[in-house]
Length: 414
Image (cartoon, rainbow, N blue to C red; front, side, top):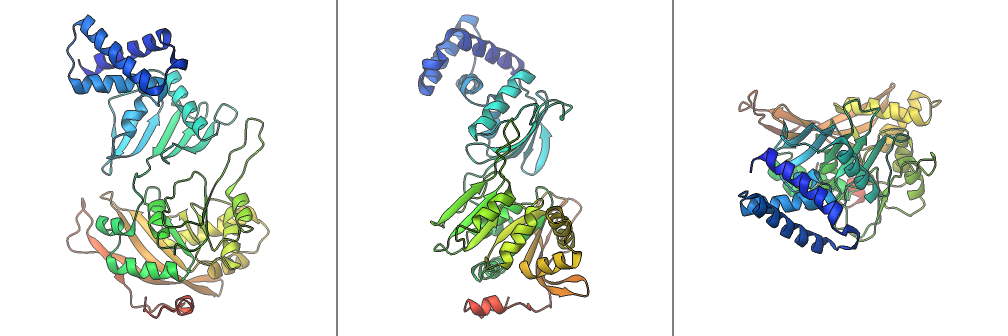
């Protein structure tokens, strides 16, 4: 049975099951067993040969189309796939091992894709429709989902899924991937323990959330930590006194929205020792900076930018979204006093993710935020157009803001 015949057979089985079986009264396991029997009988009646693996696959796909996410389930089960991009029901692209490719599979119809979308958003208590055609949500395993419906999406319902790792990201894994070195990991651990405010910047897909997750596991286990995210992704495993907060979209009537800004304000009343903001995108930047400046040292966050300098400019713009009348000088002073360290990540030409720069924010002078680069990524002679080779190297600049290290009883030179 070739792929086209298999998909046709799956569609027939799904239609038969929905019309003939009492689905509302059947448990999941019972339904799967019954589908196995029906598939076996139908194949025998048709006289079609199928391998055992293909039979199992057919049963799973029929079951998924009824109780799960259909075609999406089989894609999600492949651990080598890190991102799924659905551009209408006929076009499915995946990122696998760092490269993009189109799948030779598709949803049966646009209606079927829309059913899957509604099932996904309902699981997280959210809704998406023509009145609210954009939705950020997550799957039960934590994978991040973005949905855009027509008429905004001209090619049909568009779904982008950033898959969630089954195992928490650790610094050890980042070292094994070549993103940082053991020496730098040890220095970053000291900075986290000494409660430096650290901001992670980078472009799309550069690994900001992954890096934040790894870094957050250096937070001492006896501290009270509040995490604030658009859709909960962080996997912090060593903190028992952990409060996880997630935003909420407005309902169909346009009320009930809870933003990151609302959650940051609320978190300040929860006696946090650290606040971890998954990603800063807008007016909440002002509240985050004020939190960092009012005794909540050790805060961590991420933001989109192409360089460290770009990140500072973006922060200025984001603060202005929340306080349009604030003088630029006051904003820059706020940024300079709030953020201690900026770690910039990048996805390079060979699709590898590297830490490009670790920079200290040392103050504000003559209208500019002063930066002190501590580590810079340098390519070596083994680099080619296809493969990037290099490492983070320590600059000759001594670290200037060592007060927090001394306060924590750490005398190691960063």
